[in-house]
Image (cartoon, rainbow over all chains, first blue to last red; front, side):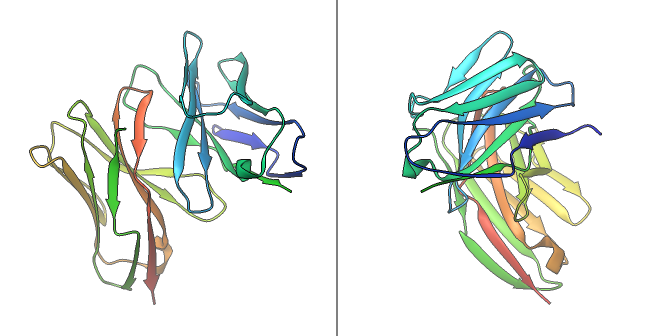
Length: 113
Length: 111
């Protein structure tokens, strides 16, 4: 099956903890993305990454960092989570050289208590 | 900051009716305009898209219109079905990394 896979489906944690979310795509794309979707469904891009370049949305706090082992995997680490980090984190993939059609995973819902 | 304005925020239509969603943008360099559909508990999925060299694209009951001069686009859904109930996002992009999403429209189709 070719798709974008994310784990875990949801995660509950306490303020100040570190969390890490996994994303894997089997679509053969060369670019992966992380988005944050808040409770109002607003979609905000956080990172765009291929093997050549990482583009970071300047509004993303430094406690967030992407981690990639190869072009099929892009994990998201959050050091010292805060209550406003509660959201759904969506991973997506696409081709850098093509038009920006993106394929999204099902998301990881983070709740920070 | 670049914006893509989407309206309405929420919309309710009867089954069989026509749904119209609209978006406007500011950056003239945008050249690709996808519409995404998102169901609860899922990620957005591409519904239909249009390039800036076109003014209309159809896919079954879904049609997107593009007006380059006015920097506007719209999504029309004819014969709306309860299964179309979802959140719809327009987006504007230039290349793979410059993608701006609208705030979404929550569509409810009543049987």
